[in-house]
Image (cartoon, rainbow, N blue to C red; front, top):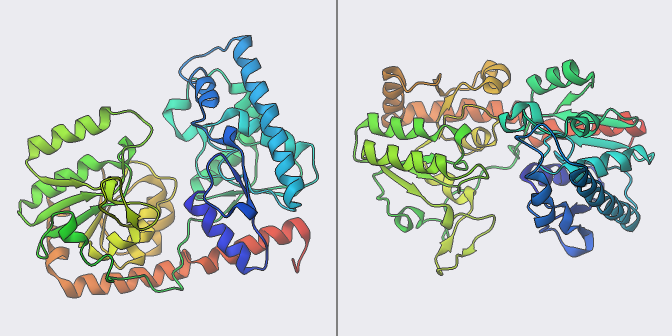
Length: 403
């Protein structure tokens, strides 16, 4: 289950609805879950066929047969899921946006076309937003299902650029529901479990804990965070990267390791100590959640080249942390005009950026003022209340008022 899907489920349950899950990998209780291993994009059969679809311009008839065979089995699973739980609204989570699993997108599209079930399709990122999908052998399928334009569907995107592109490219109208956080609930702080985090990862109390709370993939721009730490030129500055490498190969991590060695800076990769829940790793060492880490941070770096929205930005705001943010397009268009106080960079760690960061790290009063302003804006624009109101409107569109 994705983070945003969990948030939506929480909100729907607060509106009095029951939520049920179907996925290839599930951590929901079994009584509300329908596991479908073939729905996992890394299932061997799926990974085998997906590897033949992108970076090439043509597919064989045999590959088409593979796609169709997997699609039919997934349709069977979808129908079983709908029947088992008497589903009244389907909510495909990014299934009909990014073609990480072409057979699943086709299966979902055909099931929607064959039913009168209302659908709220939640789109996070589209094929045209990722260079690796540009050359492909499935453009017919992308046109048909990523996403489809079908009766009884509400399309939800997470930013205004996606809304405009969806309308321009496919003539599909959509509503924006941004990523949200539970700003109505105060953030958790230090407790007996997470108080020792700094010591556990080898940092002293007076070190500057500079947190990069993202996966290690090229679009996150982590080389800029390394450059920032280098230019701060202070032995207290320690960069901590919370997540592992993503699904885009090892070349980027190798490049970062070279940058770190050349810069002579202190960077800690702690993905083996971070998980969805607290516990112990395979070596018997404590595992912390991301929400255990944020309270310790003195600064958050978010130098992404591209983001669909920016969960890590919202998390930093929620925990009252100052953010160095690269002005990626969605931030510039949808977030920056709202008035958040940040250190902004535009693809370059300039002298001004470094001086601003230094000032923020040294001035606790300024940090407090920025944190207060930013939290109020988060509550106003990106709280559960915002999503609750907009999701209630989507249901009203599908069923009429009073649902």
